Length: 412
Image 1: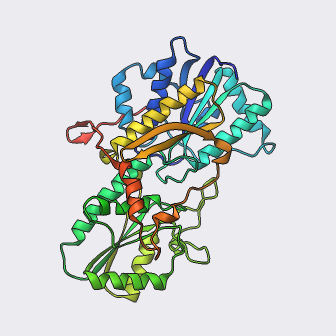
Image 2: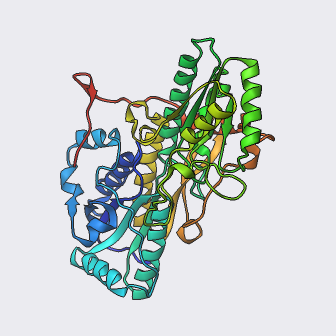
Image 3: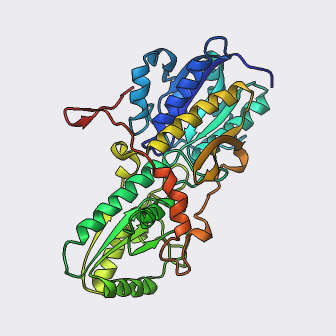
């Protein structure tokens, strides 16, 4: 593809993270660095992803972020500054009017570069839009820029946003364990952590093992079938060792028949991509332990703070997010299209990450599960190798700006 000259648009999609705005800042920085004599003129931000694009709810990010201090503040602001959506694009041939409307917007604003920051479902959007514009003969560079706290995108060592969520989970788990240790009364505390299909976030609860030896007694991931009777046996064995048992569980753990452990507590509602809304796994296990064992038991659902706790973000995660966003613009200027930017770990000690890219068509709608070597033989904890893989991703503390005791965030 010859170098294209025109404007660009960037959007954020799916669940927000503590680092998704750092990626956006990286894209903005990339465009600013190439704006003079470069191929990209104005960078527009689409509010609420492709939904906002169709409605022409666009903001001129090039003009808004002329001030460097705004960009720095954006990098440390949680959630999606542009807003997000969970819009599922129709398959080719199912709704031509939808794509024609989108093409009309591209032509109206001379959009030749499209950057979409998101996770698995967002890469589905990138793949479909790439296919459509190619079929229409419309010259356009389309790139997926990864984001997800779940760390479940294939083709990349890890995803921006995961490191900060992992750091929050590791820190919070340590604090919960410290709190639970103050009493001698037998008690079980169950910590429910996000993760429908992949257990990377729950695995992060055990990082303390290779730092200070403090970790949950048991860890259950969706990658292993959950059996209630084995669970009861594990809990009894843990209680026999000490009175204060802490257990980390993924929200997506399932029984052998495929049903979620927490399914009975849910409404059955699903999102646009057909994913069930999950929560209640910890509560279901709390009630089960209370009925079976009879000891004091509580459940804690970490919920939204896992993805929005910017006050404990990983500096490594934020810096890598900016780096990947900036690299996406560089790749676009070189004619790279229909790809997703990736993190390539070239060394673990010392930790080194480089940016690459992979064909988005082999990434969309696939799931990267926790490696078998990272799960113990009993399926109730993670291995040292897992903790060593995760540890570099939570390194460093981000310089959060405070005023009157509260963090300052940028609102677009």
